Image 1: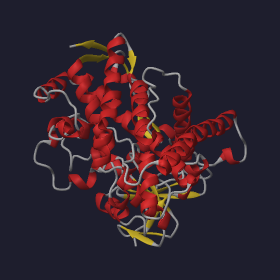
Image 2: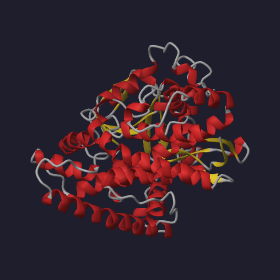
Image 3: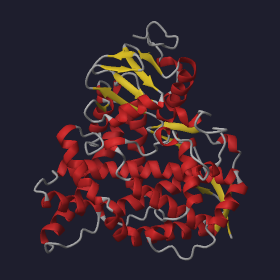
Image 4: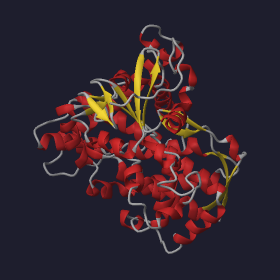
Length: 450
């Protein structure tokens, strides 16, 4: 049995003082370079094993949920803010929710929803046209994805694009910010001493809970009064209908947990990919030109099918997600004693799947730090699919993958065809920060109509 290597540690704090929470993913990458595919580090008294080799990461993900579960620390943090839906569920509860939720993201449901997505995207374009001098695109993409996710989830046109001061936006953003901080904190101080931020979080969760509960009540009433066989108009209604058809209805707590999960996850992840995408396009005019030329044949995009055969656009999105993965690592626990690459890991240990580490490995990606979308059009390394899994893998593959790609494609197509744009600051001022997902610290841009 191999001795598991560790980075140099402080006697009391272990490795807790060697990284900032917002740079946690970079510390994982640095230690993997130094220590290899499996290593462990310590946060005060807690050992955490890190796995970076593709084969072992694949083993972890494909053996969920039977052998590996989501970290109990992460689950408890998310449950504290009522994110106790599909994302944190395990066992039979997860199986039930996954089955019922999957039907809500079917192609049929997305096709029905597409006109609303088109409406919101047109609103985004109109807003940019009226504010070309300087826009905070990270903030605008967040509002765009909130509008999309809210409309898809419970049918409400919240229109935060034109009304950025809406309280729902501020509360959702604050909840995500605090979750990100708590995930990387070595000790749960908030459970013992409530700071001003902790009290504000309670207020934000309460606000969002009341906000979403109103829509749950409306959806329940509509599905009760609607004729049998009527199509649901949003995902909340689709969940209610799917549960009734299988005689396994969602509880109100499950409905709320899943809707707020969709709001938070759908907003932050997609908005960050869009932000990073336009950062890279602004820094690579030749690639932007090639992307525009690849879209020249498109007429009005009025259906999902219009966005299906656009290989260079997909390559741009893939390359963005490779360099700036929204979820660079995944924290798990093993439900039984485990052996990984000759390292024995006892039951209930914390294991970090260092998913993005091999995105920067020249074995899989030539010139790995370069933004090179064309690599995805060339002959793939046979192992690329094993190291590039931006939406996860195995049974817990992200169910929102199709919706996320759909809104990214439509937003990129319409902006690229309508505007030229440039960064309104030095490129080195744009830094990546881990706040539960990997986001740019800012993205000020100037637009000019084509």
